Picture 1 (cartoon, each protein chain N blue to C red):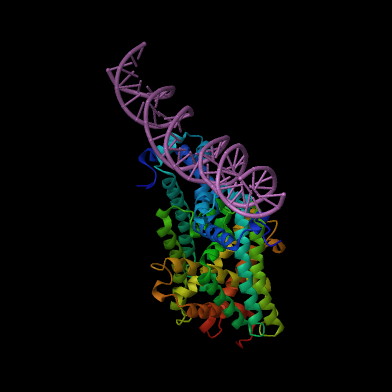
Picture 2 (tube, chains in turn red, blue, green, brown; picture 1 turned 180 degrees about the vertical axis):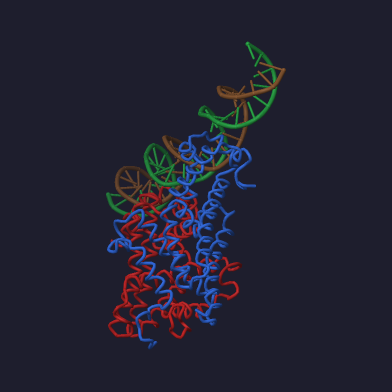
Length: 223
Length: 223
DNA sequence: TTGGTCAATGACCATGCGGTCAATATACAA
DNA sequence: TTGTATATTGACCGCATGGTCATTGACCAA
């Protein structure tokens, strides 16, 4: 079952046609969100008839599910790559790499990034996905948690750390940063990074530093 | 001009009627978001006719603007209160108070909180508000930045700190935490806090600790 | 009781939606 | 060339939307 959301009819479609449909769907959902996305517009962009679309996918939500699958799988590939390629690195390097990989993802797949960001907290998504949203939130926290656990095993991090909470908080930093990057990415004229010219490396460093030492970064430890 | 978005007709309405309209609007926008909110439903909930509503407010967006005003002002009241009542406290106490005030706000005005959360990043909002969204994001960062600046003046915090970035990151922590609290608040059965029974004080402490010392909280400073 | 004022009303409008299905185009076997 | 099976189509459906406006009815002065 390669396409659990599309029908078999869609499965057996010639590749370029499938691709056109996916592209049109990704663009439409990214641009308008699930609620405002129009199947009429989508169908026109894809160059197929509305009748066909509803043969290939049994409903708007069904198509959206397929697109979400696509986005989530692409993200998971990225995460897997980070996990493997940094398996032997110390904690701070690993989360740097993770954050950098996030920036890369937003650059490479801005539309998927947008769909993912909106999914993470929109009430706009069809109800069938609300469990998945919780799962995704939990998984990204778990992913960071595994880095922390590795760090503890290697005695880089203190074993007293509350792993899940810390992971949750680091995840919060990364998510907001990437979200803001996405916004600036598309509308760089006014915002947080304007003065900064969006220096990614710089931000990665600042953020990882903050995650490591907090505001006491430069302090002499008198808190 | 007390009600810059409602017409004079709305201004001169008897108070209970105004209140009913506001309440219905807040509920409808909170529950469905701007895009899916229905004026028909809203009007029925408020117990007035559709014609009247469009005399009081010249459009759906106009009404939404008024509700946003309401939410933003309520939030600003809370922030002002925190700023004043903690004016002489040290930095860590002030941000603790700020975060706690956030939890309180979510408890007291869950619908306004939801509207605000969605506004902060939704593309669902009418275009007239997109500038305001940027402004709001910037203001919450600035608010925290002012606490940091005070902390530096008192020599609690090192003057080398990048004030804006640090404020941005702390804001990220708070925002995500409150957002999650809101979700759990309404659907506590499954999520990050389930095992925890949503111990607010505990989370405030963890978060402020993290913001202060990062993951090195318990470490001996060997990074 | 009348006449005039004006807030309130809800039937109505054009538009666009997700989704359907009888009709048609296409492909291939005989 | 014909017959049949399948893939594709787009006109059409019921519905809900944001917004309008001729009509209504409550109120008060004369």
